[in-house]
Picture 1 (cartoon, rainbow, N blue to C red):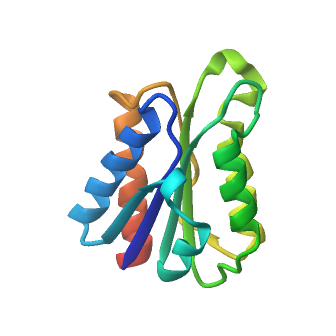
Picture 2: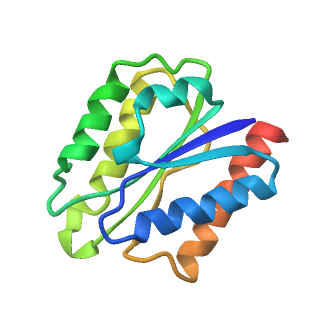
Length: 148
């Protein structure tokens, strides 16, 4: 089972999340490719069974240019027969915009035909303690649904 993780990280929090998830999935026997969004192309997902995007939300729901470019590339694909998961970090001081881009990508993956394998994981700031458990649990769910 091949998984491709693409992450966008301004502070390093999402890069940490992607690395934790990568290790978890490798422990379950997945072949994992992990790339920064600046060095990835959405078409990389076409070669994978499991497509994962880890993003942050800037301010009040704005996508930065690199995230918006990837979103536009992704919108052009047909990922029917693929599975997906999304996760990301945010700041709860932005209220209703907390992790908004995570949910934007969830909607897009569904629109282009991919099947959701686990609910979105959203954490505040850095992945510590409870957040680590959420990432580990999501990886377990991915494994159970795809390798179970």
